Image 1 (cartoon, rainbow, N blue to C red):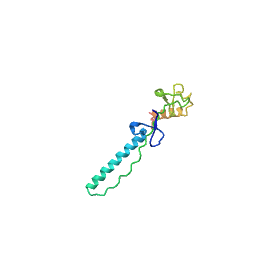
Image 2 (image 1 turned 60 degrees about the horizontal axis):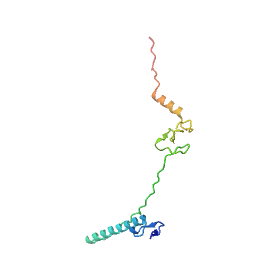
Image 3 (image 1 turned 90 degrees about the horizontal axis):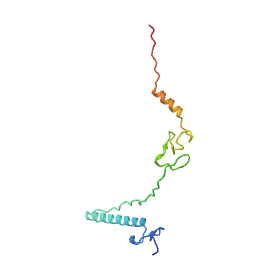
Length: 133
């Protein structure tokens, strides 16, 4: 049995169990029929209440996103690192070979960072006056 192309001409193959439509066209058709039946139900209920039926605002079509899983890679050698990646203070993620700042030519100022930390943690203690006895 040869594959049957989708009746809507989307380029995919249809399934005889889904009225010779591909899975996406079949979902769209089912969704359209559900929306139509909801609109009919609303029209009947509005007619029973003697009110003028206003058409529903058309909903935007449902678009499915193809999710691609991105793998973490070392910023120096582009090797896959998975769960073992090392995050540097410069913001990059590196493999075990390039984890040291000297190896990946880090742009972070470690000396300045250390100086600021020391200045913050150790304030200058100075007496107001020295008293002589």
